[in-house]
Length: 401
Ligand code: MLT
Image 1 (cartoon, rainbow, N blue to C red):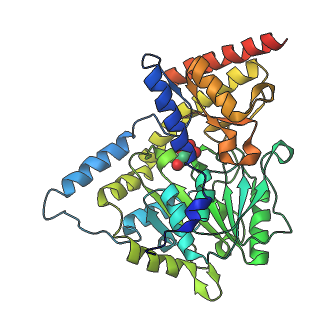
Image 2 (tube, protein in one colour):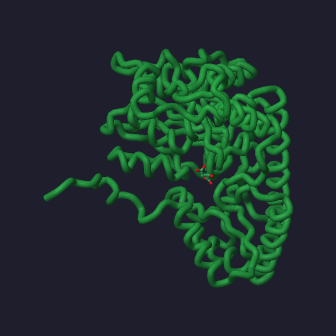
Image 3 (cartoon, helix red, strand yellow):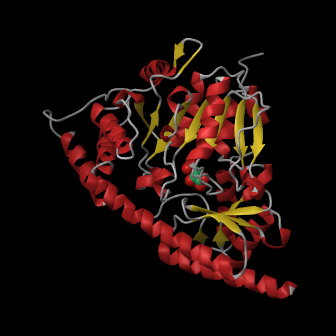
């Protein structure tokens, strides 16, 4: 008797990956309060917000102090200036968007779950694994069947579309979390053609696009035909250090329709019902990111994270450990030494050198045997962590020799 809870929660793992890690780290810290910890685990940024953003935050807070410039509710889908600024960011790379195709959000992780409202739960989801665990958990909570497509060294962690799948909702993440792999334009085009052929929709997680170098695509909308099969979820967390500030945006093309229903119009219906907009102050900060000065300043932070990645990769190179990523992404995906299991390696690093990383198994079964290192840490701490890691791995090699 009584209200029935959502029974899909019974199908989830006991706790979310990063919650489990933080509990283990807290327990270690309680036992060893004097030992410094080196955090290369969750992808949380360490650099402060850039000057252009801070100035915009202050100015917007001041606006709220007088009746003449005060703002109450903001438009649910985003203030027009923010939508236009994000569309302008795409235009810099030759992608033309109508600002009304850009929707403000409170961050990519929230949006990846919320967006599932647009799709019938009976449509199975295809998730390339290893994967950001929220894709799986949000689908499970909604009662959606998930099917997995394995990524591994054999396909450079960039699987091609399978011809035989029942899935109609496809999650792609490039640059990839956790592997750091990036699809080429041809690789992405193959997915877009596949989705258009079968009437599937791709949820493209572009949270790490700002780390892409050279000619590799930043957006799925750089391919031909994505406007009829893709939604792109974007975040200012990793691009501009907004992990604690919370702002993102989502692109839903007006041309995206299924069974005569327009997904852009459906999302307007959803947002106008389920939100009262996103903070005026934060959207003003977001607009500052997309100015020339803002983009220049955030690149400086990204350059520092890339230097951190270089330090970590040098350490792994010096001991002959194989890894992927690190160049076009803030994550390095390394093979655990001596065939160790990833949670055992996590324990070893925490216990012996107080370095915190993320076990590959947490990103799905095919992540077993791998381990993720984040380059978002403080540069000095990252150098120390890299040296501790190098020494530990070198000693183990010596042990086995
Ligand atoms: C990660 O470490 O995978 C990300 O920081 C998690 C997130 O963005 O929510």
